Image (cartoon, rainbow, N blue to C red):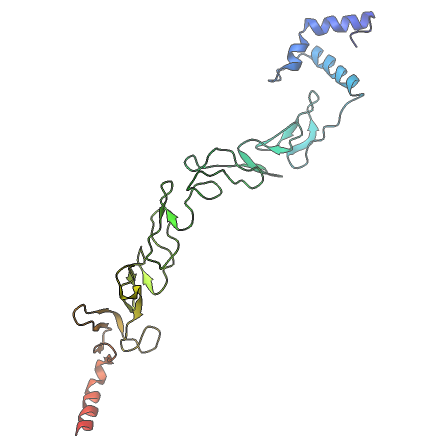
Length: 259
């Protein structure tokens, strides 16, 4: 094209040098080039490659199958890069028809802002967990200064921000599973003795028995007797709660039996 020695080749070479086409062709920024340079560069590419090259735009990552005449750059979807638009940009993942999604790695919990381009998993620092490294591991709370959940052995997990225990078991409740649920008595706090258990209130039978007539109960610390807080219309102590309206009949039956 330039080395034939004929007048046409000499003229093309002089034109290429005059317009400084070489500077524009090797530039990373790809500046706008003149029509003269575009013609020379396109002609050289065709000679080197024995004709024009196919765009080969990726059908998922590109907007269309048409590419730029100079360089063959395809038009990429959001966060997709590459001449053919065939992979995610750094800091994104999930290559597909909708482009790529931002990693959104936690600034506090992730080692870098770059995630795995297939799964989106960010590289977590010690103590941080989750795809974005923005939470504590199970059984801990208070990110980024994670602390162990304190649930007195009645729950494994707590709220990630407040530390309140979730799904307390063994008939317990409270932010630390440190009190008995309604209808039960005892001390569920670890290290306090009493088996760390909550037991059904015997008023006269336990909850869900069909014969439970108290809102709650407690154990007297002096005589260890269970005291029922009876529903309205009921009276009595543990194991003996009865309906108030039946008391006259009960007294009559007792007097007849003693007579």
